[in-house]
Image 1 (cartoon, rainbow, N blue to C red):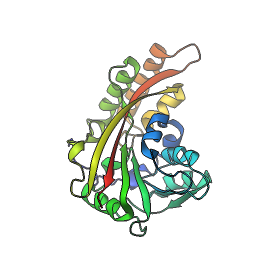
Image 2 (cartoon, one colour):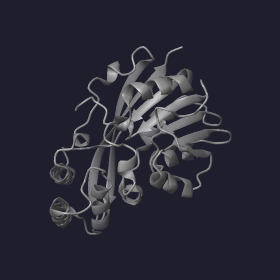
Image 3 (cartoon, helix red, strand yellow):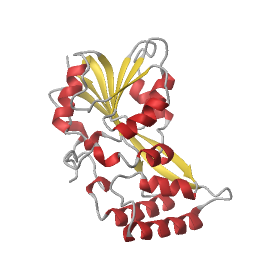
Image 4 (tube, rainbow, N blue to C red):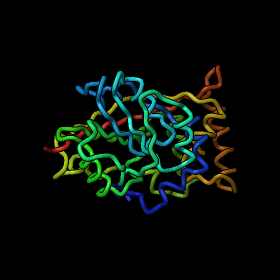
Length: 259
């Protein structure tokens, strides 16, 4: 499945029971990644679309860097995920019940579209055409993810627990087959930067972090085994405060809407 979208796997409904854990335990994004997304944009008046905004992790960080008349359209079709975002009452943010493939936004109305840990759930071709439609010529598309760093011991161990519990779900290993070729004909100027990031979680946070993945069983033998393994991971790697550090690599792929 590497390089393929996962849009046939109920990308909206599958997160309904995961919103609380997602908001509690998914990592945010490093400041350098936010800077790469917003580079050279007028943060006092730009219009940014956060496609697949989820509970608003990226939305919050974008909104914190914007001022005055700038706007973030936070698109999230799952009601439970969107409810968390709406409850936050973020300034300059307009939550919208809309999928990436049909934003409902006007033609050439946005300066940037951001997909943060969501692009793999979209119908790739339809989403790219929709992004090209709503972006102004010269507008920016940014595809961002937080990828667990297998070179780090505790993170590698969590990856193993997740892979076993998921039964080898394709979302565990999804990656864009050729990022440089993505959206050719619609976008140009592809640029990939990668930024180091970290997250610190207690045992409850580790449990929520694993449960936030929509493909991890919520109960049954596979979950019971995973929970026991999380306790062992915490015992092996927790610091004096009871926190385990997880490390991520955060790639930011940016490209420009052709005129």
